[in-house]
Length: 82
Figure 1 (cartoon, rainbow, N blue to C red):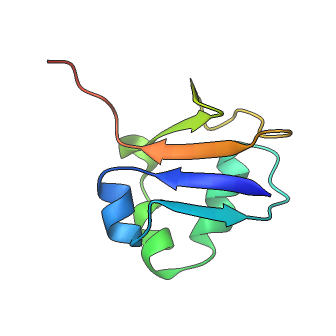
Figure 2 (figure 1 turned 90 degrees about the vertical axis):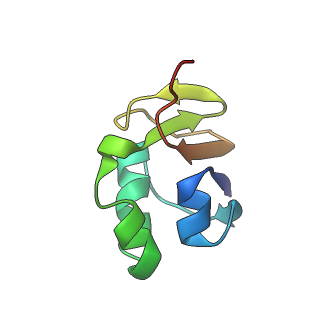
């Protein structure tokens, strides 16, 4: 089982900040494809990844990163300085 966390506008559009899924995905990109295949809000949210970042077990990673053995994957918008 893999915990998924969604932050900011992703949480708002998906209507949840957390869910637990069973997945056969090997990378974050594979996981994104599984989520997009759900259709609806998931397809909309993950259609353009340029505005989304990912973290695996709280480490920011590229979408090509492996998720084997991970406990959590989080999705969030890019952070801005200030």
